[in-house]
Image (cartoon, rainbow, N blue to C red; front, side, top):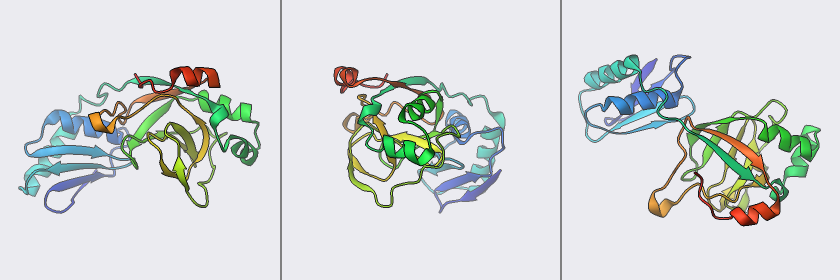
Length: 218
């Protein structure tokens, strides 16, 4: 594992041990409550530890190493969620099926037949990057230019990932469906998904979509 400085108030952990996922390392660091640390952020391959004030770099690196070595918080209480999806509302479903040499029914079956792990949260508040798509769905390219507005709840795929747009915003992933569930509430600082959580998608029709519209993920 490599630890390097990010300015004078942050450390970056990279080249983590193969058996330790970034979100697991982040859980260990949060549990350790390293003095002065105010936030721990995990991504696909790295973890950042942010500090309130500059401090002794050697001491902080030693504290990080100790926390990672101690482990014990690797599960962090990861949860499982079922997310209903109306694939009839997927604007690109037929195009994706054609690109992959599949039928729309097959795309839906492969997408719902996989359990995904939340790899990271971004690019919008609460947007979960979910990995990884089964080989049968992998390789779909991003759109040449993003849509100016993707509806909230849209389910997108790109390369080997899938994701849920938490709010209406521009976006460049291929859209294969839409969930009626709300997965964020920025005003209340409600973000139920965390790295390490697991998600399965369930196919629903338009009637159930309308019935569930606006319900919160739980």
